[in-house]
Image 1 (spheres, one colour):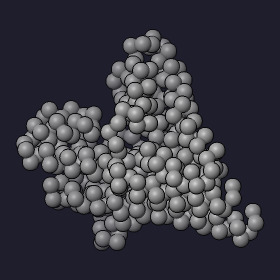
Image 2 (cartoon, rainbow, N blue to C red; image 1 turned 90 degrees about the horizontal axis):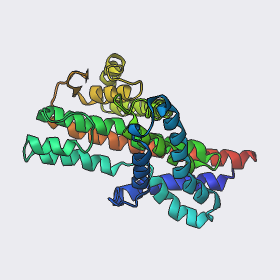
Image 3 (cartoon, helix red, strand yellow; image 1 turned 30 degrees about the vertical axis):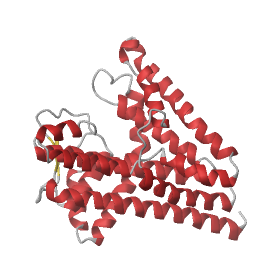
Image 4 (cartoon, rainbow, N blue to C red; image 1 turned 45 degrees about the horizontal axis):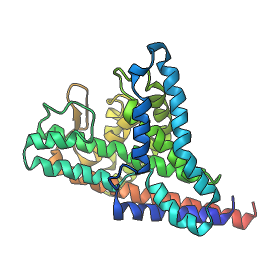
Length: 318
């Protein structure tokens, strides 16, 4: 690894965020993630396999999907001349994370609720897998903002984390693509229903890959809320409610967000996180502001680390 490669990677992070804010996620059947989703939909049907073979099939196809999706990213990162890389890499990295679209989906739910609760239920169904037919407006907003909060890790911090970490080895794009493939498979198959056996590997790998990024996300959220005077409240709620939600990653981020914003996330009959204090109609915009702050702060930190490593390599001759 030479210093210029790390400086290029640092620039790619900044440019990828700019691309995301400018164009969001184009709704195209030829988007790389959409293509991958169709491939997962092809093999991810439990009825195609005997129950005794579903875990093995899910593990095998998990690996095949990761390789097929990440290989073009690896080849581009390895063989593209530096100028072509600087132009193309931000677009490819942007394919691995979603920031603007998260806000757009949440704002779409808020706007739909103005037309009535049924419209809100229809809109939030695009964001979450839970049953929405009986949700009231507050629980509709909760589902939407929970998705935004959880995806602060899944769809923003994690892919940027793996890009930054593996850029040291010249594998940044491939690592971000690997995470995006793993997270997409979990989103499609990682459920405790008829997909449980086939999606077993997808769910476990998503948990493993998100373990460190989720805690980094929680740290940046706490730091942000301390600047707003709500840091201790966010910390207390995170310690108390971080395990209320099933799984060991999403809950701590959601609890930190709920505590810092003074709201409550609730999935009826499953979990409740936060003290409340204000409705999500009032407190929801604070969640969007927190997501923006953490995204920018983490990206700036990651880019700065790469520049610092480049300087250290140059100055020490490593």
